[in-house]
Image (cartoon, rainbow over all chains, first blue to last red; front, top):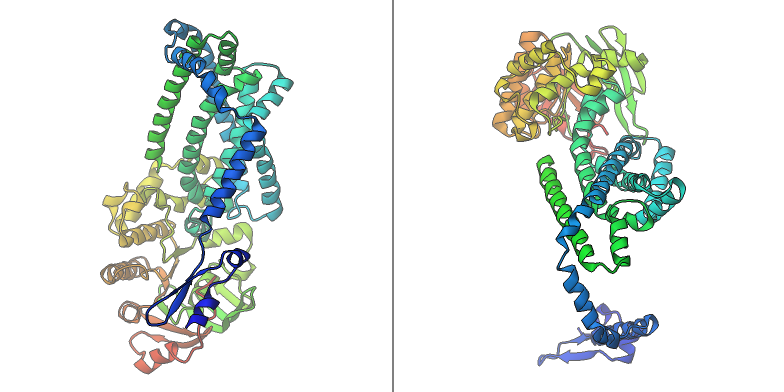
Length: 283
Length: 254
């Protein structure tokens, strides 16, 4: 019996250093209990934390000393300058316009590409591979980088931002959509072919009704993300609220900044609730 | 008339599903095909509308060699052959009438299909098809809210809407409860008698096959081992269709 127990537990180098405990019952049967690895792992994590604190020059004392300043800033942020609202509206509208237009363009392009990237509909292996590779390439670029490049090429302003959002949306929605398309029921498609429909007719009548709600849902979700993302794009000069945020920080006008952030927060929450409600209706 | 002459079917993976099939079915017959899973029942059906190709031999439907059809010709031929599936194959998110209307899609222009424009006549005809199977009241209900039996009736209405001469039904009642299965079988009988449509169906319920169908074809390991009126088949002959086969190598069809 003891031998059997021993063969069941594979001993590693760890067990050779820290010998397992043998528990013997009064009737002579025994089992072994290996020493816990937890203290060892905790020690490793602690070591990693200490090392990274040293390397990044993290200083707890600095936080303590500057705590008052932090508090000061927070107080100002939470006392938004209401009169500044008038100056927020224009860039805010710009941001929303950028998000809507960018989302529409990106999603419009993504539908045909997603269909052509779905293995259940597009039987051509090379086309699928090439399209998916391009999509993966687009997705690896952060939106901020795309926006920076667009701003460099097309000049500062909302056009660069819109384009950046469109490209980003295209990459994400195509990916989400082709994964959804691959899970649709192909039975109706088969039925259409058996009735004498050609591939397009069968796809359009049998697959599109299944794809469309998923497509709209993904598009709405991406729009949500884009409103948040586009607020930042102004940082690299791509227009919208980001410019105002950057400017307020530069002016040390934290009450103004508080107003900008509050407005953004309200808009994002409203859009997210609306989008969630609409997506709920779609399923 | 459907005529199989020495038909063989071998799948790309080397599995021979049909061996030397000879079969003649006259217009207006109601035929049940019985046999174990993997015996080749589905393959027989799917060769008739060329969802599968025949490897050897000839298969003619109303004098047309099915295997020689291509592209538009094949699609035109398929208009005359309706198909019913075990899992209904309806767009479950769409309403019953929308599903029935898809039967008209193959004859519509590109833009009408693209925008889903159906004429008033088409809609009225679709409603009539639903009425023929007794579920007119469910016309504007989404299919995912219908019971299995109702869904199979919508599928039947869709097939009727294409005005077929032949209906191929692949296990039409296999996913239905016994009571609903009987009702759907009665629908088939009515359609067969009222519209003189030939019906071929694969079925696992021998009792239903014997009760509702006129003729029974028994398939065993890709060969026809019984062919005769449902009233004359004996228990020994049924046992022969179902016994002594080696374990099915492949599921039905694919």
